[in-house]
Length: 379
Image 1 (spheres, rainbow, N blue to C red):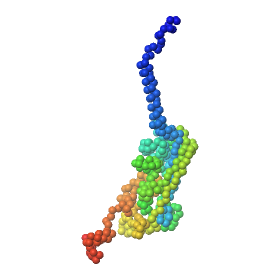
Image 2: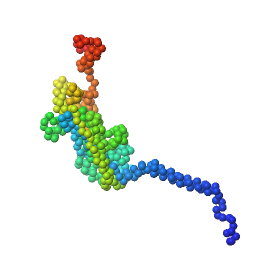
Image 3: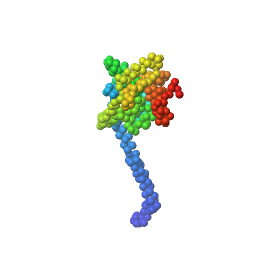
Image 4: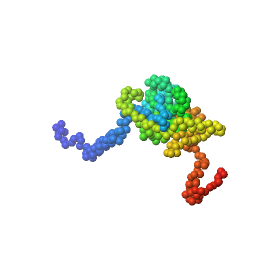
């Protein structure tokens, strides 16, 4: 026993330098791999994972800005914003399970009276905007909004979104509000001038998402609503809320107020617009016509006082979303009521071109101020 203990032989005698180096490199490789992975998770993907974690706990809901109003030169209001309710959902909060997801779609179909295929198509189309509200049904009544609000407690990701939509003051709306004086009624031909708003399509959303537009937003599509979209839109606010696992709101964490859009005052005079439309309409009827346009301009400064294109349309039909049947009636109408003949029509110049030709001829020395030309309808 004593002889064995004093022997130079020991357990680790075969653990030579090469094995030590190999073990060192193996351990170093493991720690290097862990280090690289931590670097990737913390530095490269850290912001993304932090955003995902925060989005699981919090939601940022937009506070829509009050859109700017439009007035004529005398300060008469031509549009106003009225409350609007929409049924919306957040794709991130929908169940991952296919069967549960289908149940949600079936319930939404029953609530909105829309085919399940349409709702599924909307979810597929806007699926990449996982944390944004996607509108399923626009412009629902207060009673329907209330019933959906109650039902939404059992529907993860579903909520009622309150906003506003445009109301354009046409004759019938003015009469309903008790305005009996015809001088205060807005002529229908203002639809071409004011234009209308509608939901962003997919291409518009792709182009404008980075500058603050959302899948649930509306945008000016034609007329002044489109031309002055940035000025009228205003600046959205944001409300940050804490949510539970189903996306239901628990408490408000912070709120940033919205800033309303800028009001727009036109050179147009509503009284002149009304009179010009009536005059044009009477003359069209006199000659058995239905299509025509007229413009009244102040020759001193070029201001447009009135601009009429007939036939016209009701831009309230487009505000809040237009149904397929109504839109089909407009597009299939051979008189093209959506076409603004006053600014987009092509017409023979007529006698208005004669002074221009005469000025050119005088400048080139072809005629003198005393030259007389007999015109019998053509040269």
